[in-house]
Image (tube, rainbow, N blue to C red; front, side, top):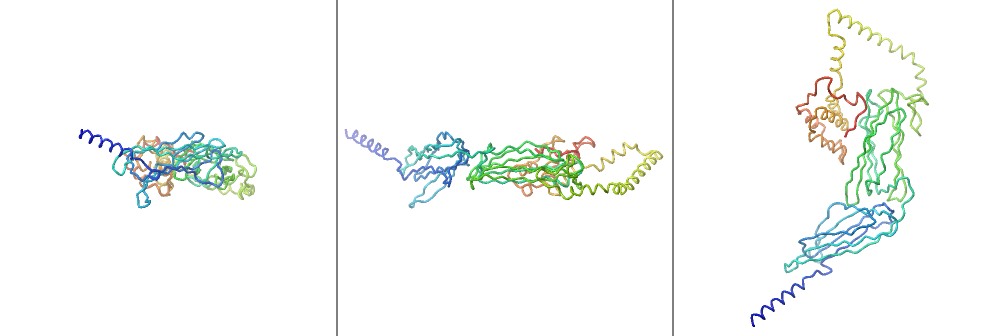
Length: 439
């Protein structure tokens, strides 16, 4: 009997100890907060929320479950952030999760409670299960303003870059225009579509757009890359018309616009067309340049220009006839063979174009010609080329994030660096037509 009573006492003490393993209100805290703003959000506008947990007891296992979030599009802004603080001399483990919510309709929308499933360790070393439940919140959403395209952004930036100066193109060449639109606090599908680039006197070849989303603590940062290859239609200059991008400034609470100004596109030394001529009018909303205003006066000197070039032209014609007669007398190779050798000697090959781009620090041109060499020789892209690609179309600065010299050396080290036999390679875009899609 004495042994039986001792066993019962031990069992009752164990049950009492187990019943005492609980987490107090100060041991486990989970709160839900919404970023305070001076104005109620419009539907589609970003709402930032923070889920914060504070735990005085050690955590061995955990899982944070979120509610359904009906009425919102949402994205988690990076991984959960864990850190330690001190409260009353005790170490407190903290959890912080940031989320961006995008309400899909006006009216009151409730954000449900988050639940943190925990396995905690008691001061006596015993594990026990506990659920921490956060508060709930209601967000008042107002109808969006009337607009052709609803594009609310807290911060916006537009950059306009060219692969080479569009007003001083090489004969027969083109230029690649890259417009980068960067917006903070916007879902990718809310960015406006790629604008239509219209032109007077220039060919415009659009490329597929690319969109990239980067998650940060202050919301998603979405970038759209819009690209066009541009080439003049003729010997006279052409123009790209202005492009306007409308958006809603979520900080200033007003609609705004960003305008890409008109751009002259011409071969080096080309003149502007006379005002009102076909195929080369000045851009919409822009005045003709001083050259265009004086084009008619320059045309009046056509006879003088003809006389000025007549003597060199006659000299070249006489030299050609003399070479032909000399070839017949001493049995020089036929003229087609001489012409072929001349072209092979002086043509601008992709290898030469790549060297020139590297020397000039032109990352876009170097990328384009390196791509031609890799595709032409059916060779794998070296790591230096992939680094340049990330710098151009990722988040880096192509002038600082890519080593063009290293790329050129890597391509020269390839077994195919010498290129195919003359006449079989792909022509260089800058001489045989507009630059292709760099992708």
